[in-house]
Length: 194
Image (cartoon, rainbow, N blue to C red; front, side):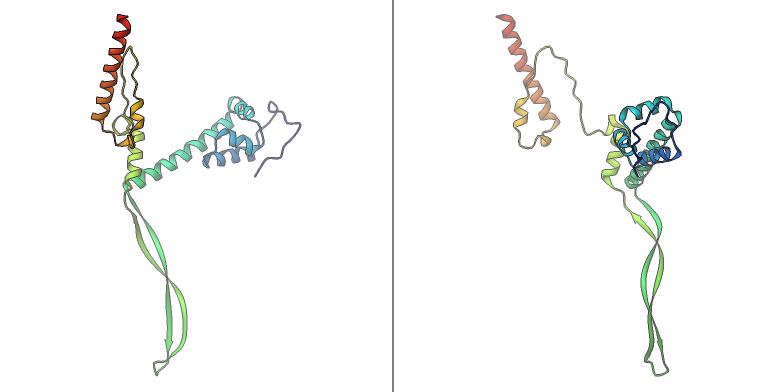
C-alpha cells in the first residue's frame, strides 16, 4: 500500500498516523532500507531523516522492525547451523471400503489420514560457518589480513596471473610477499645509491 501524495505536505507539521507507523514497522521487517521506505511512503529520504530526528515514535518503530527482523533471521540461521526438529503432521489418503456379506465392495471413499511425526533438519555446515564467521571473526573469518610495514612498494601483480588464486597456499603467499619485498628493497637500495 502506498501513501497518497499530498502536494501541500509539510514534514514539520506532520503528525505521523498509526498507518504510517505500522507500514514502517512492516517494511523494516521485510528488510527494506530507508530509501525504499521513503519510496513506499511516498516521501523523500530527507523526510525520513527528519522523522528519525524529530519524531521519537517513528525512530522507535523503525528500530523495532529492524531488530525483530534481524533477530528472527539470526534465530533461523542458528537453528539451521545446529540442526533442529519440530512436530509436523503428514496428510495421507486412506481409502475406506464397505463390503457386503459376499465380500464385494458396496461403497468406497477416500478420507484424509493425519499422521503426527517429528520432522528433522540436519545441521547445515554453510550456516554454521556463516554464524561463526560473524560472531567470532578473529577465529572463523575466511579472509586473512596481512599487515606489512614497509617503506618501499611491493608489486604482487604476478599473483593475478595465477589461474586459480584461491588455491594459493599461505606458504606460497608468504614466499611471494617475501620475494616482492626483496625486489622492493633491492630497487630502493639501488635508487638510494644513485
